[in-house]
Length: 308
Image 1 (cartoon, rainbow, N blue to C red):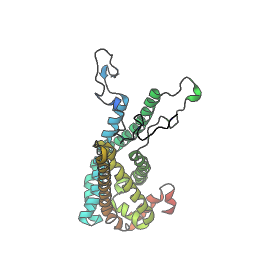
Image 2: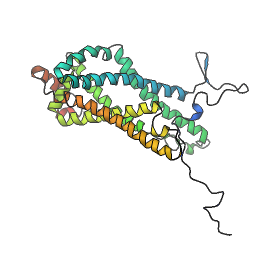
Image 3: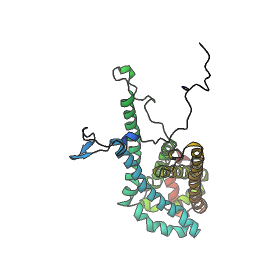
Image 4: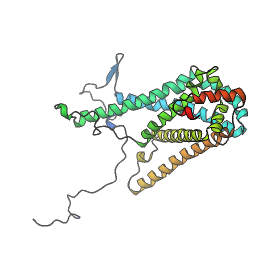
């Protein structure tokens, strides 16, 4: 057989630039396949009403819109814990503003609406989305249901790839739960409850336990801001992989978006830390019986409380 020049052979494959692919498959998007009169409807029924949307569509919307409410809470929180202290340059002067706004996001009905419900909806819908997409891929590309030995529920073959945004979210979750536990659950075990928790409560921790406080808040703020910033970029279709540019311009746009998104996240993180660390973190220990009460609360924290 004669040698074939592979560089000039017309049947050779050519490497091309990948086209942008969204995490949500195109076939589950609304209106991608227009309904026809010859085919029966494939949607689900809710309370007798027909719906063309799949469970993945609904879960995606729940995950997206739940982040809106939690972002509103984050904006109020950074205002109280960073922006106002930066303006007043004093922890005592900032306490009054915290007390004024606390009922709007730490009481009924705002705390369940802005924090608890959106947080759980975001987490549960995200996990349900992964399971639903995994099951969809398995049903389309075959899971070997004819043979029990081929059934690999936990195999990575059909599971969707974990994105960087999701990895940040999984890392953010235990940090956020720990923060809520220390600032909301622990004080409830003492007289006065959450009314004892203010900026001085945080300043006291920085003064008495600087290593733990700086490490914990750095991780919480950094991971949280990066997750939220990249998440919003995804909702707005501004992530590098969501660009519609092609050819050489595609790489330029991807790089530019990567720098812009990370620049925004870095700026927000620096702003939050400027007020949180530069003012609140330097507020010093709480005096007298107030400080002793704070010490008792911190000693009640599981695991790390023995060193506090």
